Image (cartoon, rainbow, N blue to C red; front, side, top):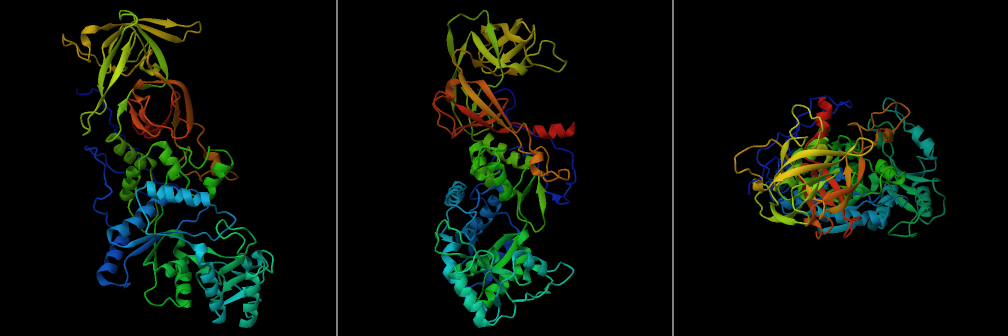
Length: 600
């Protein structure tokens, strides 16, 4: 049966604006008349400068080994939507060119890392649809990295510095003035080796010594001014226990781990561009001279109304601004998954924004478009009433309940299915679908007006019942039994179609209306003296108790996605939804309502 009323979203285009941070704005995609998923998992790969380099490597045999990429998260938080871009890039290149991809955890900081973050990362990568060829850990290379450290000391390329952290920082100089040599820079090889071995043996307290590369304190790249390589930390490591107290810093471990594993191209975001010099220096100095890995940088994802710093996300969790790492307002993959977004939508979004050399902010509306486009083609339609207003059909037989067949998908979705929806004398409709004194272009229910109940009958409002405060609590209407299915035999037309549920058979549900976590595009753009938490949106979660949902969803398992007709896309919560007490999370509205607000 053809469906009336638009269920597809047509989001309006907001006015163009220049972001305050100076980044260029990623262009928003045009609306597509076809609602097919924009990119399938096996669709041809969108070309970008990194892919072109890798294709040339394969054609010329540059590295003499298969394409080998790695995704190297630090296990100090849950992965977020920014990681999706890197995951799709690294796994996608390896898959396209018949190579290998390593999932390597750069776990060199025992103070912040935890096995729960490792497990979260593994689960999220698999949920996105990828599988790695090797699961590796930087902590497994601690012995090898220590050997490299001794090698550098022996070559006169590293030394033990006994200055404290503040002295080292001050000695680095500035971007316009060179640094100054440490007073310990010219220690002999023998003294450095002795101190390094005693550091490894645990003889010294934290912060008493560090191992530094011996490069150039006047180098224009400040990272090359004798960078720190190893530090003392008497802390238990989540994998190595108390076996080690001498931990490598990221710049020391990262490039050498790539070299140990035979990585071909090391794909990093732009904040690591200055680290490329130390990456190449270390790989060369320890002896990886035959086709070593090369580092390439690309622009990270910057998404409006979102923070993608794990430090800031951890604050949101620890300070109770959200319920946890999987809170559906969080930009973590776990939160996005719990909110009802599919892995296909995330992959399509990552492909659409592409891989570029220059920073660009992406509008959140772009992400939401790909979510809607994906869900539109896969989820069944049901009716749910969030703010119920009772309707009594005074001429409908008391006690009678009939089953009306309603299609589960609109005509432009190539899926079939229907469900039976109970219809009875007492119904619930949305309170917003009635106005006692409607404006000119309000076409829904009003006193004396006739509207269509979706898949059911025409009804006419005859009487409005109010409580003592004057609030409308009930509408008394009549129905036309000849209009079953939504058409009148006499050909008369109505302009309004509204959704409803049977009061006798409806499921009581809790509905959580999730919105943007922050109230402004750049959460860091706050007055002096405040931080990003000042930009939190107080309406990012509105909990609706006593919503009414049609009973066809009663036996569906948690995690089932729907479109609540005329309302939005929802998913039954995988944590809190229980039989007889369903909880639905709003994934996204049907339209970009924030664009309308901006237009006003």
